[in-house]
Length: 136
View 1 (cartoon, rainbow, N blue to C red):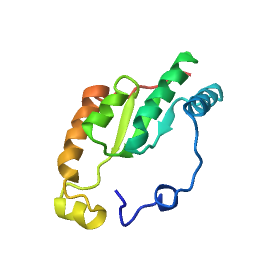
View 2: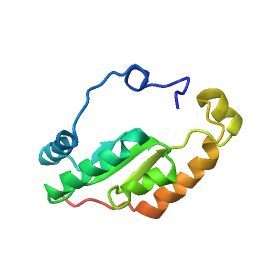
View 3: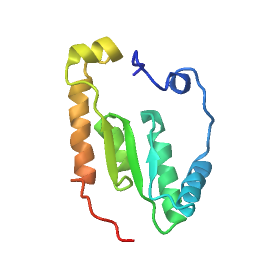
View 4: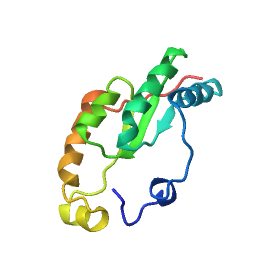
């Protein structure tokens, strides 16, 4: 969205970071699980969603379980559907309810409209958050 306050500017707009194959990403997920991670937190751009979904499937095939949390800017519902059944919890980053603010800070006047639809899709997939006390 190229928000005026972007904290990831160097990565998202200057092309920094490093490329990974689907196999490398799934290997990272498996390594995290083997190191004791309880989940894999993903922050992805919409155009990578099909590749991320493939990596999650590959990691799940190579492990007893894969727990994924998706923390992200709001995506369009059709993009979220690619993650159906792969993400345990969504942590939506809902920024604007007001179209004027969405326009001013992110040049996205339609953001509130499609953000609401995306949150409905996230809820359809993951349902209510249920908290429980973990046993030791």
